[in-house]
Amino acid sequence: MKRKNVIKGLSQEVEHGDAIDKLYHEYHYTGPEKIDKFLCENKSSHLCQQSIDNLTEIIDELGEDRVHQLLGLDGEPWITVCTVMNNAEAEERWEEIRMQLKKLWQKGSIAYYSRDVITRSAYIDDCDNILTEAVKQYGIWAMRNKSSLTVDPFFRKMENEGRYATPDIFLEVRNSLGRSHMIPTSDKDPSVLQGVFPCADDKRQYEMEDYLKALEEGVDWREYQEVRSLSTPDYGAHGSIKGHILHNPGKTIGDEWTPIADEQQVGPIMSGDSGRIDLVFKSETDERYLLVEVKPDKDGVDSAFGQVGRYKHQFLANTSLPHLSTTDIRLAIAAPDFYDAHQRIAKEWDIELIQVN
Figure 1 (cartoon, rainbow, N blue to C red):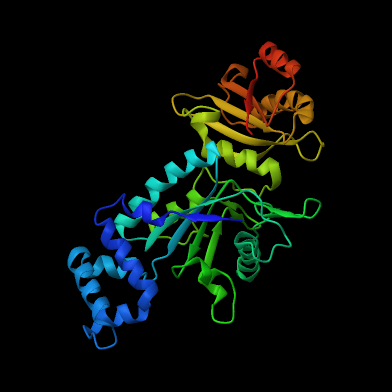
Figure 2: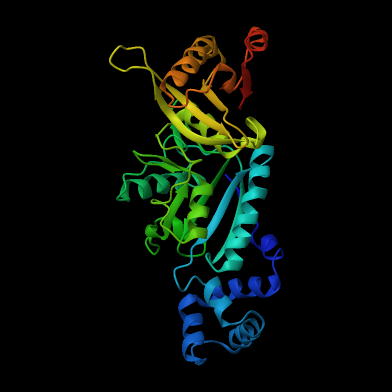
């Protein structure tokens, strides 16, 4: 496993990029404690003359407040976004997240951010593999968290293939700069890892965007709620498809739709004639609704046609809006793939098919 860290390239995106690079060089060379002492006490006896000259130049250019932030001295986290190489979807999502990170840095909410480009394979028995060890730490972090978090199935141990499966793009949060700090050794503290996204607890799933939005609003990410986040925990391929639709409406269902519910109960429970609609959306322009049924494989799509038809009428029966009719309810089925016959049936029955890989 190779990781290509591109923090130097990112530093050139912002003003004073060269000074930021020099600061992090000094960070690794002298350590944050000595730089902090230099900032607070303006004493230089503990530093070599070259470091004194470098830090004086950096502070003059960046200002003490920005240097303070870049060192994370007030608890600002370091963010690393990991993307699988040669993955177009991860690349596109990274471009969107990078803009969020840049704004958070300019606002002073994070110390700094970087990107790691990783290869796909992370073998379970490869003790020298950085990502293999990192995934183990993700699991330890989740188990130690008081909120009963889990990183499954986003980071899965695939015994039959002898490797770990990771998302195409994920985010790490640390309270110290430097990847080596994340791996537990005799001189490093594994608690430096503060989070990995996506993750989930028994209530909901936390995406990268949820964490960044919580940072932007200055609230605890575990308490942050937004309508587009899943309110009902859903794992595996089924949950991944739902999450992809919620976070990429423009590419999947259209920007006019706003999510209002997931796993919405419809039909009388006591009679057994009930079900749960995977995703419910409302039009931003008028009183129309979109019901989406998710299937993790195309073999399950056959039953989905019957489900969405039944859910339409149950949804109408449950609603308190008597003026709604069947023409106000749109239906969609989301799956990784479809048979040719599915396309023909969908056209005949006016059901939208959403292909989510």
